[in-house]
Length: 292
Length: 128
Image 1 (cartoon, rainbow over the protein chains, first blue to last red):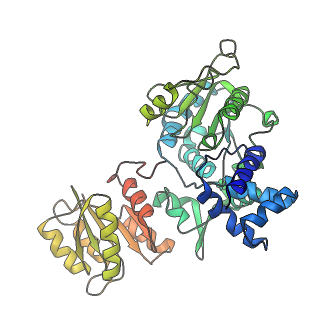
Image 2: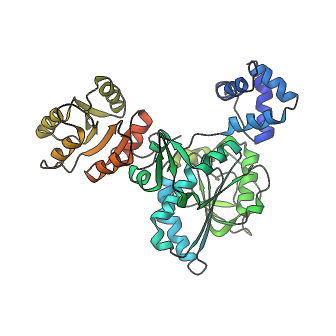
Image 3: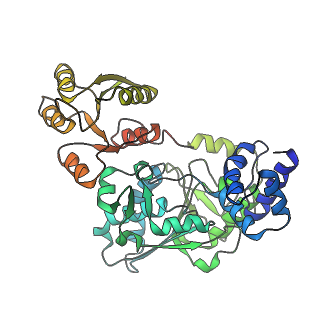
């Protein structure tokens, strides 16, 4: 791949998905886009770039999807799901005792492992949630990924990443070499296509937003804009959950970290929180490292 | 250092498992069937057993039953690692005292995840 082609693809991805690749991600582009180019009957990256420059619509969508699909597995990082079970849900069960309803958004639901993990957590605590209305909305940029999430069918490899064997036996049905999430669990989740760069106010407000391991791909201004818009979709006593290597610190004061609970954030009082970025210095990076 | 007994009649599988487990800082011993594994356990129980099902002389399920009845035999974490990949076998293993279950083929990530699941590795070893 020539430097010109790489620069073109970097800018193209930035404009179309917000994905912000550093200068040394040639290998990532090649590993994701070469198979795609071949599938489309093209000779390589050079011809792919030509087609993109020519405005090939389907190809533009395919390239964005191929570059933004991330690895995911059940109960990824474990800690956020412990927080969800031991801290978030007990608080919500108390706070919403009269309303008996909870709305959860997986903002980067990917192939479904995260929303299904949350659904399993909720099933495990179903005694405390009798008569509750539970809504889990899982969104992702990629149609291909959403189809997979909706079907809830996983390979033997996938069901062995992060998923305790008891959960596999309890919530999945084996069909040949694959395993499918059972219909009761699938019915708990609504899957929708959504680009976080675009307006998402139509989704309504949520008690819990999981937005993990997606913002790391965005540049600073995009992150700030997404945080500020997320703040408008979250209940004043709701929870935002970010990935292990992510933070709001130094980017926005619309959310504040919950001490001792890595990755967990509360919205600040909107009157106190001006929707403006604060000055960014060296501290956010330190905060991230210290929090790991 | 935590210890793991790898029980499998295939020397290739034992070698792969040993390399992975040593990478995760386990001290590894090997046995080629359930009977040899039981002899080792009678001398000293390991912290973990990575256990194949189908083996000559004594299979993994029978071995687990004997080991669980040894003094302190309830302590080792038993992780099955087998080509028996159907729900019936998994359920049988769990009710017989297994802690986790790996369906072959496996890789380092699966081993690390399952060993973390039974509490033998810190969670998030494979974290970003």
